[in-house]
Length: 319
Image 1 (cartoon, one colour):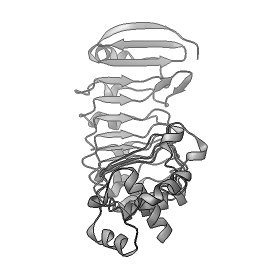
Image 2 (cartoon, rainbow, N blue to C red):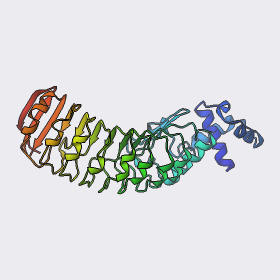
Image 3 (cartoon, helix red, strand yellow):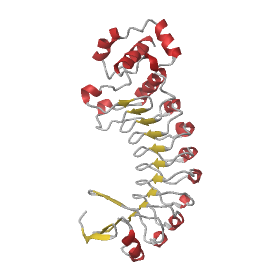
Image 4 (tube, rainbow, N blue to C red):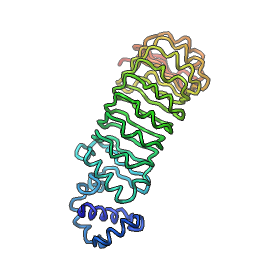
């Protein structure tokens, strides 16, 4: 423990946080342990920087993106360097260090994307988080998040999630992304998320969306599923951006939708993508697509694309 505390206070010195930012109890502990003269430890810490303190702090050496202040911590491994990915043990160390720094209750935003985290139980230590990004990890169990009631933004894209019921305890959520998981059924409890505005459930295994009835969503992404019936979407009159299909470079994501009549009269709709679905007939949307800021439709090789109501092209495209 003494060794960890020693390395911790070296980190405080390096980042200029200073002893004045520590809680008085922690400062007295350091004084009693004789660790106030941390300058003598700096050279020793530099020799192993990135291994002892917060798991992977070597931003000066490898160029990893690391940003820390009293409320925001970004440990996203954007460059995808395998040697610097955070696993469960490193995450536990990070949480311990932040607790010793007194940042556990100050932290409001945390980004741990592009790592190899499976167990997120230690995140219970951050009760004041409002924004959490855990995209592209190996997470399957969301129950540890149930106590983070202040969350307003939660990103869990591309993990190994099958069940989403735990996120329905987070009633302050305004934005939720579960894209690229293994979800088959939308939890009925999602109707408890009265403040939810942006929902991304794309690239899952969902066949029914009737559970979304009654939500006040403005953005809804459902491409890359197995949906046939979208009649319930006609009740979500707040929708502005609806993606039921998507084309990304050489990848295409759609559903099995053949009837689009229910969305023809959504009054606030501005963006609509119907690419790669089960019908070539979109005549029911003739008037709609002329008033949209963005409209895209791809059926087999036929592509229609409108921007601000103006047809930008209707042509055949190989994919």
